[in-house]
Amino acid sequence: MISLLFFVNDHYRFYELKDKIRSSAYLMASMIQQISNTRSNKQINTENLSFITHASCFNLFDTKSFGIMMKVCLFYVKKVGDDSYTYQAISFGTADQFGTNVDQLSNVGATRTQNYSAMITKCPSLDRTDMFIENVGDEKLLIECFYHPSASYSKNKLGFIILSPEFGSISRYKSNRGNFAYRLVIIPKPGLFPVVSS
Image 1: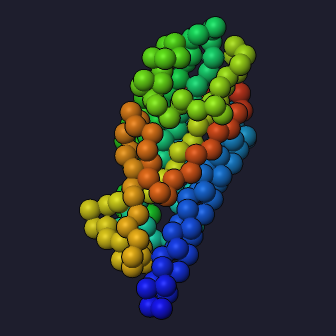
Image 2 (image 1 turned 120 degrees about the horizontal axis):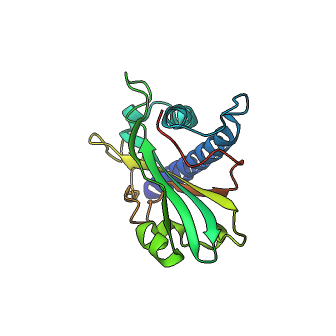
């Protein structure tokens, strides 16, 4: 009976965290689409993404106390020819929500143009049916939100007694993001991407 109660507790917590990261992904998508509405220059910059990431993880509360951080990988792709794609990989995340620093961007990739097979070798997450682009000139943005453990992580801080959650790699060369991850594909408004430095 006690083991069953522990399992019910862990099961609830597991799906609660999955739901929170899904909410963060949708919040991020909404803010990306709307942040430059009142500007003449619509292109998103790194400062915009820092504040978007910071705001989109507030639904988790104090991530530092939980021993986890929210990480995000964005993959922007535009079809420019029959088998030619321009893409940009951006990865960044929160150190902790209530610290002195807003989110630290770890990597804003250069905009590259390659064929499909070379592109997915660099970014395996792009090898997805929902990232297929049919027409030249069309664009898509893949948003991957996931939790990553900090140095102080322990499963007890997250409220787990039996289950040991899996956390994935933050490398853009791998597509495994762990148990607490959500992927969302959107068609960005024209002019938003690629991301530029602040």
